[in-house]
Structure formats: structure tokens, C-alpha cells
Length: 148
Image 1 (tube, helix red, strand yellow):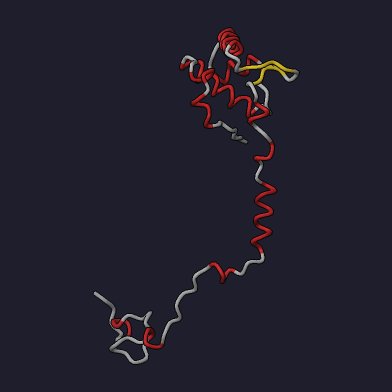
Image 2 (cartoon, helix red, strand yellow):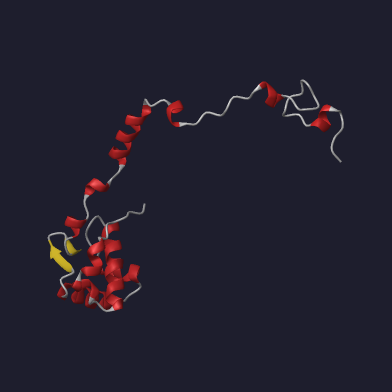
């Protein structure tokens, strides 16, 4: 199952991130993806290396550079993006919100929000040449002839 994570729009104003070399910026975004998929912590170095198509030695260098820039922290859970828990939180799960929305709208009459079709009048059901012919029947069928 795929997950999504928050990227705040102040990212463009963050000098720690904006001053990164392009390859480090790319690695950081990919590390955020791995963190999201790994319940809020970075996976082991070998898994990061496989997922990012890097050698484990290069992953260690990248992580060291991101630590030096203040973008990766170490805690009891291991390596994690800086402020991950503050920027990612569980209330983003929409299940309960959607359930409440559906319950609120369950008792609303569908006629109140749907435009009803106009009633067909007697004149609509008759064609000019046929007094009682249903409008769904073409004049050619009414006369017993099929169009050629």
C-alpha cells in the first residue's frame, strides 16, 4: 500500500534545503518517501542503498552530509528526517472524517439536490403528422417504412 506524506510550502524558504546540491536534494526527497513507507523512520542502510540504487558507502556519505546540514536526526528509533513527527501526524487519516460526512448526508432527500426532468407534455408525445404516435417512434416507423 502506498502512503502520502506532507511537504510544506515553506520548503522554498528553507535555506538548509535550498542550499543543498541537487543530488542531495533528490536524495532527501527520496529519503522522505522511504521514511513515510517505513512508519516514520529510515530503513537500514542496505535497504536505502537498494531503493535509491546507491552503494551502501554512498548512502552513508549522503546521510552524513544531510546530518551536517541539520536535515537528518538520530533518536531512539534510528535515523529520521528532522522534525518528521511535527510535520507528519496521524490526523490526516480521513476514514473517520468521511464516515461523519456520510452520516450527516445520509438523511438528506435526493430530490433536494437533484434537478428533476421536466414532465413530458401531451404535445411532446405526438408528432405533427401523427395524432397519437409516441415521440419515440420515428415517422418512418409509424408509416411502416424503414429509412434507407
